Image 1 (cartoon, rainbow, N blue to C red):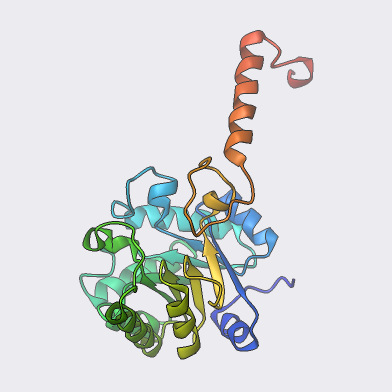
Image 2: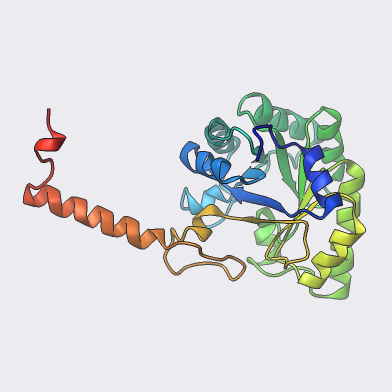
Amino acid sequence: MNGKRVTNIELLEKKRSGEKITVITAYDYPTARLADAAGVDVILVGDSLGMVVLGYENTLPVTMEDMLSHTAAAARGARRAMVVGDMPFMSYQASCAQAVENAGCLVQKAGAHAVKVEGGRAVAESIRHIVDAGIPVMGHLGLTPQSVLKFGGFKVQGRSSEAARHIIEDAKLLEEAGAFAIVLELIPKSLAEEITKSVSVPIIGIGAGPYCDGQVQVIHDILGLYGERIPKHAKKYLSLSENIEEAIKNYVSDVRSGEFPGPEHSF
């Protein structure tokens, strides 16, 4: 593992060579630093922070100010990984000019190396304008959480032949608009495989099966920070919630009993 920054060009080379791409979410300096040290290719500062960090029911309340703050913190922790900042709800839908301005803020003010935009044909023109401004864009199709009200919840997308065809067409439109990669979320694995083979840009899956060019997972899910509550598409590598709770209980006990602070903790 070298110390050079991962770029969109390198990700394209990985797809061409068949090397899997690793992406993980991180929303602050310490977790981004750890993910970077572990060797992930891309750190996605997702608007999922609204749910896993800020406690909202969905991603809709997340603001540009939230994304700027968390993206900047994560960017300070990443020395090698590419940092992608999510464009939050209503930060790009109103106009292409709005999309370019907010994408520029994530790069200029927060230190992102690219931005992520949800949606297909409806946002293709905005993606084209952002790319023309010199900012790499990652697309996002399938279950797009900012459209959760339209979908009626967090449900698998692309099950019918018509819905599948729509997602395939959107993927090709995003590629034509200049997106350097596309996230596919919660779609059948056979559909993800077809899309991965039919476009030239890297396809990153989350709940989209094993045939994508890479995978992205929420760091809180793989570390088990929410106990047994974990999505079907995620794999829990640790159960940190239990360890953290036990550690805090021990601290509370030591303070109440007078064992902490001891002589070695005092000046």
